[in-house]
Image 1: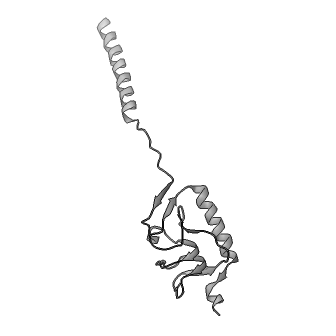
Image 2: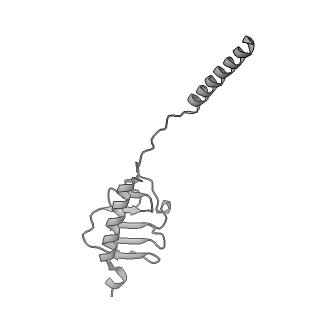
Image 3: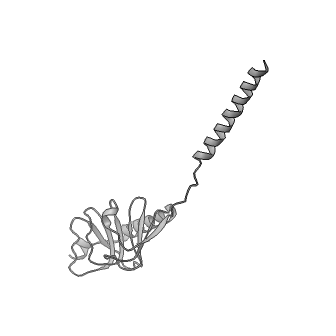
Length: 145
């Protein structure tokens, strides 16, 4: 009788020890991914349906169906295939996607230093600013008439 009781107690202790070992073995230290990162190597192809706000827009290929809001742009610039408006007084340059933003340190042009961010509050704030300016801006096709 004592042997059977010892067997059950030993079995129970073994199950508990194995369960604790599995619990500690599967725990991982979760490394928090940064919500922003610096970049010199970026492409508009990384963003679906981009919204571009540019104090100055340089030579850069703009995907079709993009919404572009500019203050100044390079002479001879062609906006075919994108929706472009002018908004005077823009200070700053950024490109928005649905869930991310590329904030540039200078004009919207190749190899400009920028910061990607996915921080929701910042992205939402930039979307709000873009939409408010977009609604008040002048369509570039109307401006040239």
